[in-house]
Length: 312
Image (cartoon, rainbow, N blue to C red; front, side):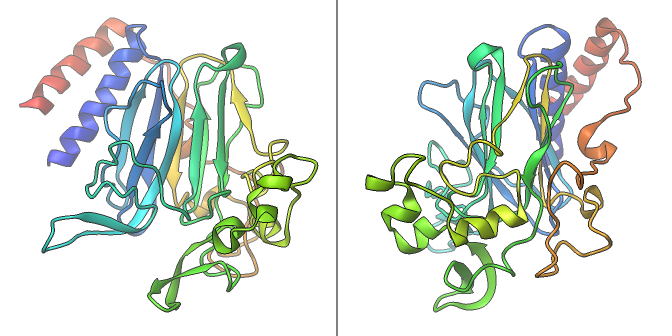
């Protein structure tokens, strides 16, 4: 019940802010996986903080969050999390932010982790966003803008493929020590080998000397719109014009949102691509055909009543 109240309060705060002309951007974070995911959020230096930096989302659960004006930072999912009975320390097998608790409190994701990155109200008033596999992969993630004004390269992006089972052996993170058990994450070549060539550092620290590798191509072939290495900007950065934009961030997005010729997205060797001809997003992710909203005064009154009940 407490989690339902928190989700309801978060949603109503977003609604109240939008209709009153205050903060007009929001995230709707949904866990479509068959297991619990613990989102983590890290704000960039100098950026206003979000109202939470880490929490649990049960399978099928969503949470709405208002986004401060000018916010920049990153969001990711943590998996296989637990609290140590002896020390009460909270930790996760993938995406751990090393804070020792559900709230990341300024900690970033330990690689490998699939990252959703945002800069709101950036250059020219545009929102910039991407999904990055530069630090590796642990979960399928989709970012879909809703209600954005016309302008920019405003389109869904992400990595909808399940890559852990197909991960190359030398990048694979197993569920048990010693490299045994099912794959739970897939490292980047930089994380796995630490070389300047793969990390785009030293003599390879610029676009002319840091090129795609066979390892980055594994990620790019499966997820053409996601960053696969540090200088993969041309096909991986997206922008939306300012406005009342909600970014729907979905972990394990529905397989029905991809035209994959009937192939399971979990089937190794038949990974669904995400490109201009294969993306089919449903109304649950894009909200494309909504009825006309009620007058703002009525919406505010209803929201206030429900909010008051949720806080009791």
